[in-house]
Image (cartoon, rainbow over all chains, first blue to last red; front, side):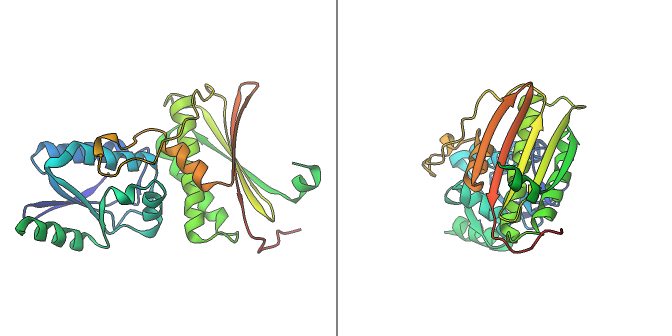
Amino acid sequence: MIFEDKFIGGILVVKPLEKRIDASSSTNFEGHMVEAIKDGHNRIVLDLAEVDFIDSSGLVAIVSTLKMIGPRGDLVIGGMKETVMSLFRLTRMNRVFQIYPSGEEAVNTLCDGFKA
Amino acid sequence: MDQSKEKEARTITLTVDSRLEDVFLVGLAVRSICSYTSLSVMEASQMEVCVVEAVNNAIKHSYHLKKGYDVDIIISLYPDQIEFKVCNSGEPMKSTAEARVNFDPKDVKELPEGGLGLYIINSIMDEVSYRCLDGRNVVRMCKWIKPRVSLPE
């Protein structure tokens, strides 16, 4: 799985450059997120703009990342397509995560929160 | 299902090896077939998720991630429904317990990490059944559709 990682104002933006986060790629995805957290990043924006399919394995990998960050950080999602969003709604994970229309808006919100 | 109903069906059988990395091919085929029906793009995507979940379950729980085994996906298109049967000859499913989604969204530690696939299937599909007969495990999933296109004679 290929990622584009950016560091903006103390926030790590992780953008998977794949169309799918599924059972075959979720381990790779989770490994990437675990490495980022181990490297000290605990304010993370997950930009899903390129992803048009997520299954339960992908969803669980994102939930596991949130659990690993815990209360000492943030995992915010941006750029989610409607097909992916529908799975978050169905499983009620849309109530768990802060979700923004784009990665940029997610970053701006985290930055504003940090300043406040 | 009665014989006259069976005659109305147009059916295709896909076979995929028990490799998680190949399951996306099944998903693409399902999405394409659904696009021929009156299902919306969103509903077609949901059908894809359900079939992918069922195939993943077969590979993980019936074949224990061992490669080299067949998973068959029988797709039958009727004027008023689309039916998917996901079949394998591995170990029968031990549990049909689905995740509970009435969790407290603020209690991150208690968020579900298992059974979400079955929850997704049961929530999206109109009919779901599972049977094991003569060493063959079959998950049947059905979605009712509005008649829109007439199938070729």
